[in-house]
Image (cartoon, rainbow, N blue to C red):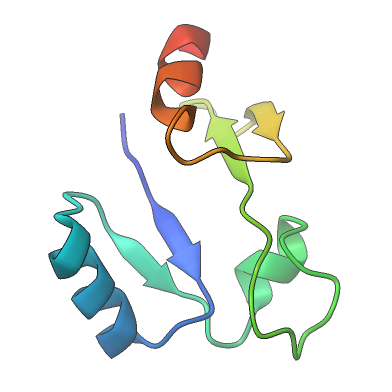
Length: 83
């Protein structure tokens, strides 16, 4: 299983954020908003922030479940139930 996070922040900002919160998974710097646009986190290529959304993607690369509204505190347990 691989967990990835992404936001529109720079690589440096992502690294600082991951260190601050002790994340043990990669955070992708989507500064050009390509992921955000492709996965529906934004409709505006100039957006300042992405929507907090999540996808469970299977080993075959297919989306198994979409989570259009994510509550950060409850989300890990929600995804674990869906695995």
